[in-house]
Image (tube, rainbow, N blue to C red; front, side):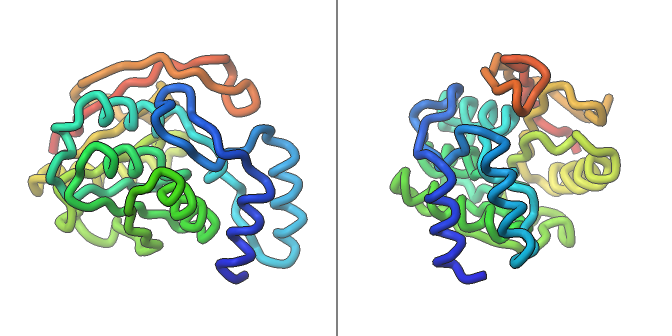
Length: 217
């Protein structure tokens, strides 16, 4: 699938809107879950697309974005990575807040395209990479952001081990989580908490309490 086809698909199936926790940012987001999922499945038959997680501003990413926008000194002058960036909301917040440079890592080509579109909609530069950062120790960045990565045990365990290595190596590591099942019990220092409105299409309630943690290496 070409970049032009991905652009067209995203623009045709999303609306440029503001996520509730960080209305300073505009994102190409789905207004309804089912139609986009169906459109993705239709295209899947030809292009092997992953589920469209990139079309939603998940509560963890929104909480990280809110924290960064409220505390710009956290990112100012730093090299920042938004890991498993989704729609890129945290990466865009870091760029707005004055990071030296920002990278967004995603394995889904549609997510990479969506992040590019979202960055342009906000007039910021975000580096896009499909390279798996877990192969290293996070040494390329001063600050690593991870939102909502504890919903599945294998991923949570693998990612948290990498985040702790990065923190031990000197990076600041911030993770936001709304109480997912596989949130680690140790190695977390709470730095902020937010109530983030959300859709019943995605969550089991209309808002989630999201905590932002600093990971201790």
